[in-house]
Amino acid sequence: MTKSICHSNDEIQSLMLDVEANDGVLNDELQSKFDNLLIEKNDKLVNCVYVISVQKAHLAAVDEEIKRLQAFKKHCQTVQKSVKRLIELNVNVDEKIMDDMGAVRISWRKNPDRLEVTDEKLLIETLEKSSYPNLVRVTKSVDKIELKKIIQTSGVAVTGSKLIPGEKGVIIK
Image 1 (cartoon, rainbow, N blue to C red):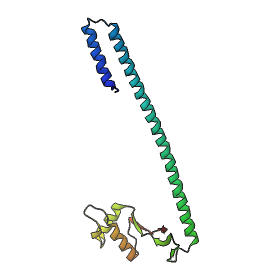
Image 2 (cartoon, rainbow, N blue to C red):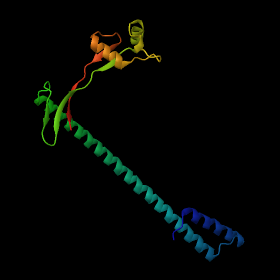
Image 3 (tube, rainbow, N blue to C red):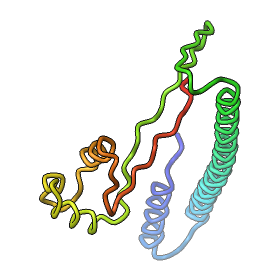
Protein backbone atom coordinates (compact mmCIF):
# COMPACT_ATOMS: atom_id res chain seq x y z
CA MET A 1 0.00 0.00 0.00
CA THR A 2 1.38 3.39 -0.94
CA LYS A 3 1.65 6.11 1.65
CA SER A 4 0.70 9.72 1.19
CA ILE A 5 3.22 12.54 1.33
CA CYS A 6 1.71 13.61 4.66
CA HIS A 7 2.17 10.10 6.03
CA SER A 8 5.80 10.14 4.86
CA ASN A 9 6.29 13.50 6.64
CA ASP A 10 4.80 12.00 9.82
CA GLU A 11 7.19 9.05 9.59
CA ILE A 12 10.16 11.38 9.09
CA GLN A 13 9.14 13.36 12.18
CA SER A 14 8.73 10.12 14.13
CA LEU A 15 12.20 9.05 12.96
CA MET A 16 13.63 12.40 14.12
CA LEU A 17 12.10 11.74 17.56
CA ASP A 18 13.79 8.32 17.53
CA VAL A 19 17.12 10.05 16.77
CA GLU A 20 16.57 12.41 19.73
CA ALA A 21 15.72 9.43 21.95
CA ASN A 22 18.97 7.85 20.78
CA ASP A 23 20.88 10.84 22.24
CA GLY A 24 20.94 12.55 18.80
CA VAL A 25 22.98 9.77 17.28
CA LEU A 26 21.95 8.67 13.79
CA ASN A 27 22.97 5.01 13.67
CA ASP A 28 23.08 2.94 10.47
CA GLU A 29 19.56 1.54 10.94
CA LEU A 30 18.02 5.01 11.50
CA GLN A 31 20.09 6.44 8.62
CA SER A 32 18.81 3.68 6.30
CA LYS A 33 15.17 4.32 7.33
CA PHE A 34 15.69 8.07 6.93
CA ASP A 35 17.20 7.66 3.44
CA ASN A 36 14.38 5.33 2.34
CA LEU A 37 11.72 7.75 3.61
CA LEU A 38 13.34 10.66 1.77
CA ILE A 39 13.54 8.63 -1.43
CA GLU A 40 9.85 7.64 -1.10
CA LYS A 41 8.84 11.24 -0.43
CA ASN A 42 10.83 12.55 -3.39
CA ASP A 43 9.32 9.87 -5.65
CA LYS A 44 5.84 10.96 -4.56
CA LEU A 45 6.67 14.62 -5.21
CA VAL A 46 8.00 13.75 -8.67
CA ASN A 47 4.76 11.85 -9.35
CA CYS A 48 2.74 14.88 -8.22
CA VAL A 49 4.68 17.09 -10.63
CA TYR A 50 4.04 14.51 -13.37
CA VAL A 51 0.28 14.59 -12.63
CA ILE A 52 0.29 18.39 -12.83
CA SER A 53 2.13 18.37 -16.16
CA VAL A 54 -0.27 15.76 -17.60
CA GLN A 55 -3.29 17.79 -16.45
CA LYS A 56 -1.75 20.92 -17.95
CA ALA A 57 -1.40 19.09 -21.27
CA HIS A 58 -5.02 17.91 -21.03
CA LEU A 59 -6.19 21.48 -20.42
CA ALA A 60 -4.22 22.73 -23.42
CA ALA A 61 -5.78 19.99 -25.57
CA VAL A 62 -9.28 20.92 -24.33
CA ASP A 63 -8.61 24.59 -25.14
CA GLU A 64 -7.53 23.63 -28.67
CA GLU A 65 -10.62 21.44 -29.11
CA ILE A 66 -12.86 24.30 -27.93
CA LYS A 67 -11.24 26.61 -30.48
CA ARG A 68 -11.73 24.00 -33.21
CA LEU A 69 -15.38 23.47 -32.30
CA GLN A 70 -16.05 27.21 -32.11
CA ALA A 71 -14.55 27.65 -35.58
CA PHE A 72 -16.66 24.75 -36.86
CA LYS A 73 -19.79 26.26 -35.27
CA LYS A 74 -19.06 29.59 -36.95
CA HIS A 75 -18.54 27.80 -40.28
CA CYS A 76 -21.87 25.94 -39.92
CA GLN A 77 -23.68 29.19 -39.08
CA THR A 78 -22.16 30.87 -42.14
CA VAL A 79 -23.17 27.99 -44.40
CA GLN A 80 -26.69 27.99 -42.95
CA LYS A 81 -27.01 31.74 -43.46
CA SER A 82 -25.71 31.47 -47.04
CA VAL A 83 -28.11 28.68 -47.94
CA LYS A 84 -31.05 30.55 -46.38
CA ARG A 85 -30.08 33.60 -48.43
CA LEU A 86 -29.89 31.44 -51.55
CA ILE A 87 -33.42 30.15 -50.86
CA GLU A 88 -34.68 33.71 -50.29
CA LEU A 89 -33.20 34.85 -53.60
CA ASN A 90 -34.69 31.96 -55.55
CA VAL A 91 -38.21 31.87 -54.16
CA ASN A 92 -40.77 34.66 -54.44
CA VAL A 93 -40.87 35.90 -50.84
CA ASP A 94 -43.97 38.02 -51.38
CA GLU A 95 -46.09 34.94 -52.05
CA LYS A 96 -47.32 33.16 -48.97
CA ILE A 97 -46.14 29.68 -49.78
CA MET A 98 -45.86 26.47 -47.90
CA ASP A 99 -43.76 24.08 -49.93
CA ASP A 100 -43.60 20.57 -48.54
CA MET A 101 -40.52 18.85 -49.94
CA GLY A 102 -40.75 15.61 -48.02
CA ALA A 103 -38.19 15.84 -45.22
CA VAL A 104 -38.29 19.66 -45.05
CA ARG A 105 -40.99 22.26 -45.27
CA ILE A 106 -40.28 25.83 -46.29
CA SER A 107 -42.56 28.56 -45.07
CA TRP A 108 -42.21 32.32 -44.94
CA ARG A 109 -43.06 34.71 -42.22
CA LYS A 110 -42.51 38.35 -41.51
CA ASN A 111 -40.99 39.05 -38.13
CA PRO A 112 -43.14 41.44 -36.10
CA ASP A 113 -42.32 45.13 -36.05
CA ARG A 114 -40.34 46.22 -33.01
CA LEU A 115 -40.34 49.53 -31.26
CA GLU A 116 -37.02 51.21 -30.52
CA VAL A 117 -37.05 53.95 -27.92
CA THR A 118 -34.44 56.48 -28.96
CA ASP A 119 -34.91 58.99 -26.13
CA GLU A 120 -36.84 57.56 -23.19
CA LYS A 121 -37.00 60.78 -21.16
CA LEU A 122 -38.39 62.75 -24.08
CA LEU A 123 -40.84 59.96 -24.91
CA ILE A 124 -42.12 59.85 -21.31
CA GLU A 125 -42.63 63.63 -21.29
CA THR A 126 -44.43 63.46 -24.65
CA LEU A 127 -46.72 60.63 -23.55
CA GLU A 128 -47.55 62.27 -20.20
CA LYS A 129 -48.70 65.40 -22.07
CA SER A 130 -50.58 63.42 -24.76
CA SER A 131 -53.84 61.53 -24.64
CA TYR A 132 -51.89 58.33 -23.74
CA PRO A 133 -50.49 58.97 -20.25
CA ASN A 134 -51.53 55.42 -19.29
CA LEU A 135 -48.65 54.15 -21.47
CA VAL A 136 -46.20 55.61 -18.95
CA ARG A 137 -45.74 53.27 -16.03
CA VAL A 138 -45.20 54.49 -12.48
CA THR A 139 -41.55 53.55 -12.83
CA LYS A 140 -41.40 56.08 -15.65
CA SER A 141 -40.86 53.55 -18.42
CA VAL A 142 -42.77 53.25 -21.67
CA ASP A 143 -45.21 50.45 -22.47
CA LYS A 144 -43.54 49.65 -25.77
CA ILE A 145 -46.10 47.03 -26.81
CA GLU A 146 -49.02 49.44 -26.49
CA LEU A 147 -47.07 52.31 -28.05
CA LYS A 148 -46.17 50.09 -30.99
CA LYS A 149 -49.87 49.22 -31.49
CA ILE A 150 -50.84 52.90 -31.41
CA ILE A 151 -48.13 53.88 -33.88
CA GLN A 152 -49.07 51.00 -36.18
CA THR A 153 -52.79 51.82 -36.14
CA SER A 154 -52.51 55.61 -36.32
CA GLY A 155 -49.42 55.81 -38.51
CA VAL A 156 -48.26 58.83 -36.50
CA ALA A 157 -44.67 58.89 -35.25
CA VAL A 158 -44.16 59.73 -31.59
CA THR A 159 -41.16 61.92 -30.75
CA GLY A 160 -38.49 59.87 -28.97
CA SER A 161 -39.28 56.60 -30.71
CA LYS A 162 -39.24 55.03 -34.14
CA LEU A 163 -40.98 51.97 -35.55
CA ILE A 164 -38.58 49.51 -37.15
CA PRO A 165 -40.27 47.19 -39.69
CA GLY A 166 -39.87 43.45 -39.12
CA GLU A 167 -37.59 41.60 -41.50
CA LYS A 168 -38.65 38.72 -43.73
CA GLY A 169 -36.95 35.44 -43.00
CA VAL A 170 -36.94 31.76 -43.82
CA ILE A 171 -38.13 29.05 -41.44
CA ILE A 172 -36.88 25.52 -42.08
CA LYS A 173 -38.32 22.71 -40.00
